Image (tube, rainbow over all chains, first blue to last red; front, side, top):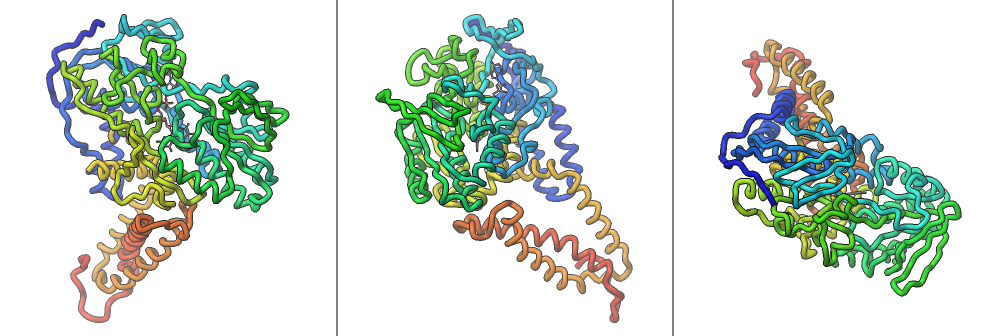
Length: 451
Length: 122
Ligand SMILES: Cc1cc2nc3c(=O)[nH]c(=O)nc-3n(C[C@H](O)[C@H](O)[C@H](O)COP(=O)(O)OP(=O)(O)OC[C@H]3O[C@@H](n4cnc5c(N)ncnc54)[C@H](O)[C@@H]3O)c2cc1C
């Protein structure tokens, strides 16, 4: 591994365009001036001087958050971000769109508005990584050399593992999925709205792979039940949940609590039942048991949650786990405490791509982006990573319109509420308000590298 | 400390999404304050009780309105944290109403029968 690091010295942080814009806007605000000025005068930090070239693959929440942090905390570094996508989607809002709570327009912003001015943006996708040569190759054939690499490519929704599945058909024939994007979320709501008027048989699914926001399939189930109840069609409808695992959520207290609630709501769960095929026109789904038994079920409404894995560019590269539980999905081989690559010390991972026991949520990035930035800067400065991540993951679990659970946990699956008075398993308006109104502003602050 | 920092940032980001409204409200408030402050013999003290009552009324209404406009309902207050948040938000709504109503009532209230006041807020 060749890593060119200039003498790392400490200077005062330069003012950037984003900060100036921020101050300008703040000065225009008439209300809460004291609070807002406190928000603008973030704790003074010294910037590390370096001429290192840092490449960030992916400009989702993780990529944008780390780009903002590094451009502020490093003086003289060249920062390049690689991602073709120009629209930044607020994915935690998809469940709100897909259940008729938010309009779809609320989840999309322009990536250009979130990226700091000093970052070079290569509008292409990484086709492969050659970490032995410190090089990333784009689909367009560009070879980009780096001193340090941050992999933040998110994950790949592997619908192809479900025979007959067609993402473009979401919204028709009772076929839904909240995961692929804003349009699918919107189409899912239209299908849910139609279904709740006529009632019938609904199948909700869960794959066996690690998931981003593993609470989303549960939220969709709770909200479907609530929408049927509102429409007066609950009694004439059946909602069944098929999990490819022997649980529905990996954190035991949450798993048990949700199962208790579903027993009360008459949502039977079939465990070890994996969706492997679908006949969209005939509205029939095929489930497979671990013993190889195939069961074909008819439905009026189905919510498909795809298996998830690393994007090919990572999966097929030396950066992926070579063995162990994360190898099959091709997840990034990072040390779960420092989020530094276990074999390539100039590579870090951030967000959904990481092959760590838990932590595929925006809330994970809220806690880990500052940590990855700090650890990377420690390494640039010639030291070792100083910060340790506890795997913080959070998921406001919608129970019905107006109420939610605010579940926060760590790598060990311990419930770790960020405020001591929060009861994670208590039906809560506050948790609902967080999800409905406060999470997007928090997300934007994370993306801008401020929290 | 981190949670306070996060909270401030959330308020700031929320404010950014409502800049035109906030600008309009600020203009109205400045106009009301100017009208009240420029008025000779402004009766700040006399307008105070009625303003407090109106502010309190808004706060009381907000206990029902805040859950409604956030697509929930008062029956969803599950435990004391929910109530504390709702009451906090309602007090904020009441305080805001008071901040507009006090200069408004001061500006429009008729001349006082007894001795003139200093014209300053009391
Ligand atoms: C339905 C749903 C509900 C959710 N609910 C919540 C919630 O309530 N709370 C919560 O905290 N989190 C929630 N999440 C999870 C959260 O949105 C994600 O964990 C978070 O957005 C992950 O950020 P990321 O940067 O790792 O990946 P992403 O935001 O997915 O970004 C990855 C980026 O990498 C790019 N990319 C991919 N491949 C390449 C390549 N080869 N080269 C270059 N760029 C590439 C993509 O174009 C994309 O822009 C939810 C997610 C979904 C889908």
